[in-house]
View 1: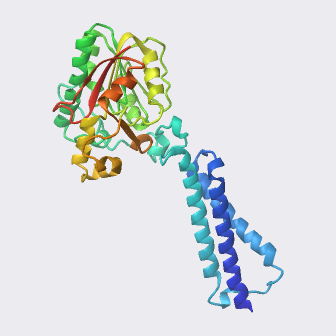
View 2: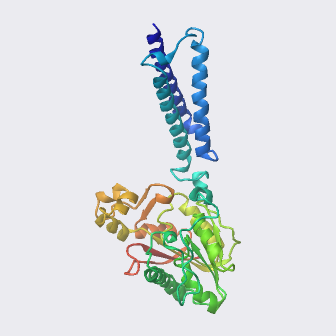
Length: 371
């Protein structure tokens, strides 16, 4: 009899665990993202486990007051295992529920105001950037250590060369459509640790340009704050379309592989960028178009392509849809056919040109737009 009671005792715990999991599933859509998600998950899991024990004790304590679970193979080991499984399931459910709101990003911010704050990126504050700033002869601005270069080369020469090549692409368009006037204000939309922005330092020194950099990754911005001159404005933004600048205040806003990831609110962002640009100001942003589609299709066996790109692209060698939106937040991928991008962006800007990529930049097209 005691053996049956104990077996039933374990089954009851498992049933309660299943009921709790089902309740979590029913409530997922109604839950809001909580601050400190992992701490909440652990706290709630412990509370639920204690609640299970209290429920069973209250329900069956009187009927088996003398039960000694250690005298039987079905014993505390089984009960603890059931409780442990329940606690793990509950914790995972809470974490998954919270991440549903943030779409798998390590942040407490809602998905439409997502950024990567320092305390979620680093175990220590101030952050350990993995090494000191790198000083290179002839370079006024220090380079970040290799671990802070966003996947670009750890070789200082190569790192500088890629940034210089990409900056030249933008500078050509600025000179062509705006001219290199004095005291202009230029902003990099998605600056990371300044790989491209650093090469506008010449214009800062010689023409009095004001340099602005923003990024959603707080550690990148913090590195710039600690290592670059104070008059270079850097700040942490979010994916919500709001910039902390006055109307008609910036001459040029450029970005590399930012609109390739803006799946939501891309039109909202275009209007916000338009707001802060001066009349006649330039917006220079790269996009995924037909060339990028073909590039990813041809390189689908590369690990980073498989990890980041929608399998939908691998179904057709040539781009067979007007646009494709896939993934989410930092891992989202956005594709527009050139002429579709011209039409859509043309609602908000005068699209001067769509520059196909050359050898300096593999596969993304450059939107050249004027306010």
